[in-house]
Image 1 (tube, rainbow, N blue to C red):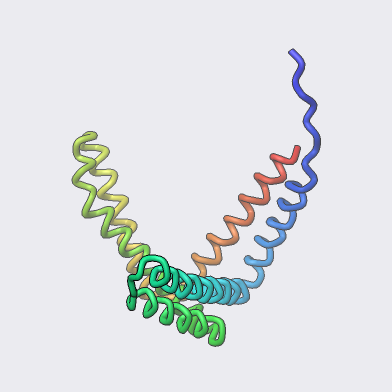
Image 2 (cartoon, rainbow, N blue to C red; image 1 turned 120 degrees about the vertical axis):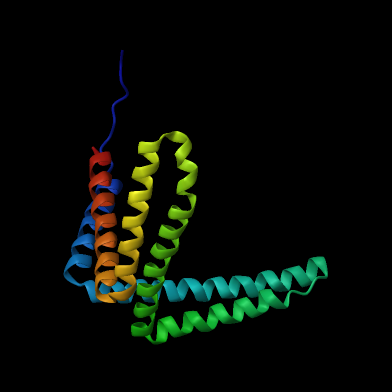
Length: 173
């Protein structure tokens, strides 16, 4: 059987190299990486707020329904985004605590829903409960140790870039 000849994917290869380089930069400049994440998040929140303003005006225009909450939410988003962009250190601290609180809420949800895994067997249930408790412990540590949480965010970001870069390079061939 003839297999179609596959060409080398230069675009994927270049994206892979850029991604590996981005991972390298994240590892060597962790504070700069967190600053970049804070600014990108701030810009995203501003854009979301502008979108919500537009959406609120469209609701009024087409449906005749005024949504004060949509406008209020949009204004709050824009203010938060401006704070993130203009005060990057505040943005970094907020992102670190948001990340820790997210882990904490997820761990509590795992513990609350672990009882449903009892139907799959007692060993599976016990494993889920142990992992959920470890997640809860890790979340509490992240919450009370912001430096560790920031380092963890940087590690995950670097891992993402390295994994993406490697897979893009492999797919290029």
